[in-house]
Length: 315
Length: 221
Image 1: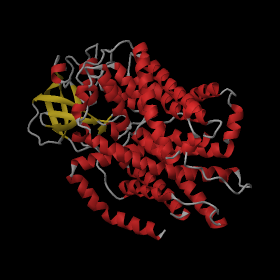
Image 2: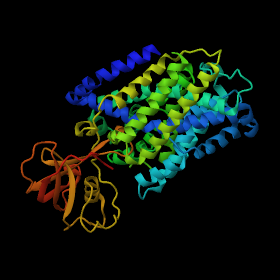
Image 3: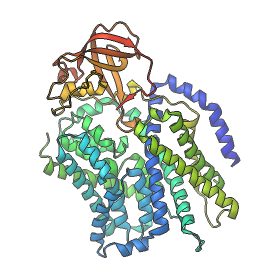
C-alpha cells in the first residue's frame, strides 16, 4: 500500500518529463500511442468479458455446463464453436471467459469457444462486410475458416491436450455460504487484475513491433502466394489488432492478394502477441507455448485452404 | 501485493479511464464511438473496486488466498500514461507504414454533399474507386495538415494501432505553409491522377487555401 503511494507520487512527478520526452522522440511517441490505443480499445471489451466470467463463475460451473453440452465430445466442440457467435466482442474478453468454462470434461469446448467468439460474432462479420464491399465471399470465407480453426483446435485438444499444462488455477471460494453476488464480484476482480496485467504486456509488445516493422515488408508480399500467406500470418501476430478492426486494415492492403488477406483475418483473432501473453497469464506458460504455435499453423492452413476454395486461386 | 493494493489499482484504472473519457484525450487513441463503452467500463471498474474494498473492510479479507500478483504492478503503466502523461495522437510519420499500390475494385459511391465538403480519405477513395466519377468537375472542400506538397490526414478505423495516412497532392494557389499547418482547401481533383504510378495519391488543383486552427480531434475515420 505504501509502495503504491510512493509509486503514484513518482509517476505524477515524472509525468511532465515523460511528456517532454515524447515530443522530442517521434518513434517513442508512436510506440506509446499504439500502446495506449490497444489498451484503451481493449479495456471496455475486457470489462465486458470479466462481467461475463463473473456471471459464469456464479451461475454456470463447468459441471453444470458439461451437463448442458452434448455428451459426444466432438458434438460438444461443434456446439461451442457456433455458440461463440453469441458473445459480441473482441478477443481480449473471451480469454478469461474461456478459462472459467475450462475443466476436464469441457476443455475442448471451452477452447473452441475462446477461438470462435472473437472471430465469427455478428459485429465482426458486419465489419468485414463493410470493409470488403461487393465481396460477400470474403465474409463467408472468414466465418468458415475461423469456425473450422476453432473446431479443429478443440478436437486436437480433446485428443492430445493435457490438463497439467494448465498451471494457473482459479482461486476456489472456500466460503461455501458465499452469496452469488460475492462469487461473481470476486471472480470478476480476480480475472480483471490477471488479464489486464497481461494485456499491458501484450499491448507493449505490439507497440514495440509496430514501431519496428519497416514499411518495405508490405511491398514484398504481392508476388508469391506462399510468401504472402506466411508474411500476413506473422503480421497478424505482431500487429495484434482488435478483431473488429482487422478487416479494415486487411482491406487497405490492396497490393496483397485476397487469400493472404484472409489468412490475416483468421490468424489475428486466434493468435497474436497480446493474446499469447494473456493466455500465458490466465492458463499458464506450458499451455501457451504449446497452444499458440499449433493455433498459428492450424489457422494459417484452414484459411489458405478455405481461401483457395471460396475465393479462387491467387488473385 | 496485498488485496487492498489490488483493489486500489482496480479503482485507479477505473478512474483514469473515466478521466480520459471526460477530458476527451481518449480521442487521441480511439474513435468517438467508444465513448459510452469507456464510461460503462469506468463505472463498472469503480463499482467493482468499491464493492471489494467495502467488503474487505466489513468482513476482513478472505483467508486462504495466496498473492502472487507482482504482475499487477504493470497496471500502473496505463494509469500513468493516461492520467499523468499527455500522450500525443498518432503522428503522420508513425501512420505511414502502409501504402496501397493496386486499384481497389470500382463501385458506385453516393452523390457528393451539396456544399462539397468531403473528408480527405473519402476524396482519396472516390478518386481511386468511384465508378460514377462524382468528383469530376466538382469543387470540393477538404481539411488536413500539410506534409511537403501534400495535404494529409491520419485515418484510424478502430484505434491508433491501425492508423494509416491518407494524402492528396496539391497544386495551384496553395501558398507557402510550413509543414504540419492545418489547412482548409478548396479545389478540383484533376481526373486521372489517381493511378498506380502515383500510388493512388490524387492531385488537386487548388483555388483557395486557408490556414485553420488544429482541430481537437486530429483523426479522420
